[in-house]
Length: 306
Image (tube, rainbow, N blue to C red; front, side, top):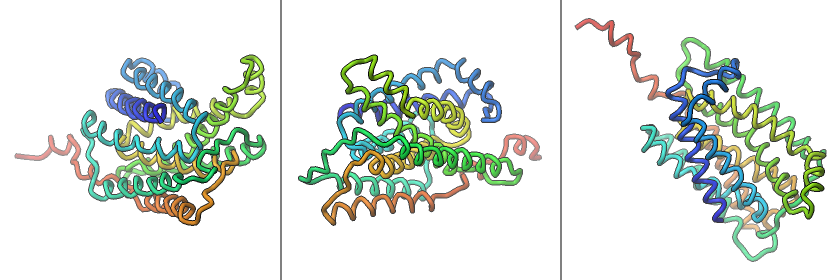
């Protein structure tokens, strides 16, 4: 629990620091990854944010060794509250009434998932340790392809000249899928930390698909998330990304690593209803940013006659 809460603080802090750093940089794009990396690596503030995210990654490894996947996701998602507060305080971002209701519904949905973990059954403390490699690849490879395709589609639509500014929901879903795969890989890596010999554990890990999934999601996730974070509000894109990651990991991770679903009908209904509600809210969230569209450009103000 302590490691999960610490991970929340580190992740929220890291995202906010990166957002502030990106606001001061020239526009970045996934089509120029070398330029993107050169710009962000030259920003001390961005490096501080990335170090905070890396520390959150280390805390997440500890969590996955001791908690079931679904329970861990329920705790991780509580960090959305801190993220929204930091975004409002340090970035000056404000959410609309519809977005606040949507975020509240997401928190309620994930609370239902957390409540489904309570009980006296053995399934509440079952921590999966292994997953068949073919099953992991069958789950992760199509997911990675879908995430990259969805991000590319959002980029193409955003380049339309007369399109309203995007809220970043599509970007958040795409990056959330990649981070969901990364979360499954982190879970797989954490299982090798319990092995007796370090050298043997490292060799076994290199023979597994997990380090290579982490390399792919780390490289693509870095470029995609920074470009999306620069042009969209962190108070919206990060909660969407976090929700998708948590749902993806809780559902597919539980099945892949053989962690038992609730046996009691009420708890099973809470788990399924919470998942369905979160997905429904994501689909219903606004796709265009009316706040940005309502602000007239600076050039238009200068050309207005007295």
